Image (cartoon, rainbow, N blue to C red; front, side, top):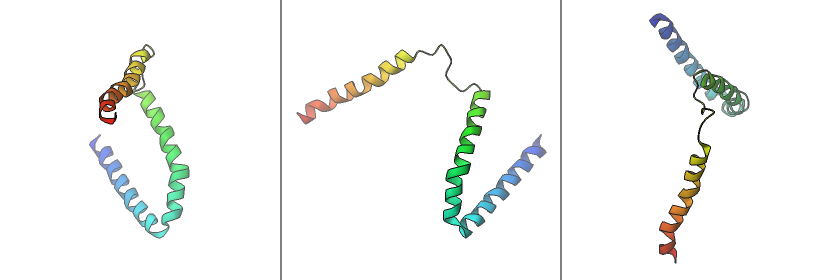
Length: 86
């Protein structure tokens, strides 16, 4: 298991160095490629990873309590700031 982790770490290091060289040679084109292709691809892989590890909210989650909390924050802030403004 350790050998596999070390191999992955070496590959990641090599890919980072390769990306530095490519960014030096073609900076704007690499930015566009990263934004248009790699960004959405990374997002899609992260969704699958999160779903496999059950990081999403449970079905029986109490949305009303969260909504009440977020609606009460502006009221509390306004009541604290209003005396200073008026």
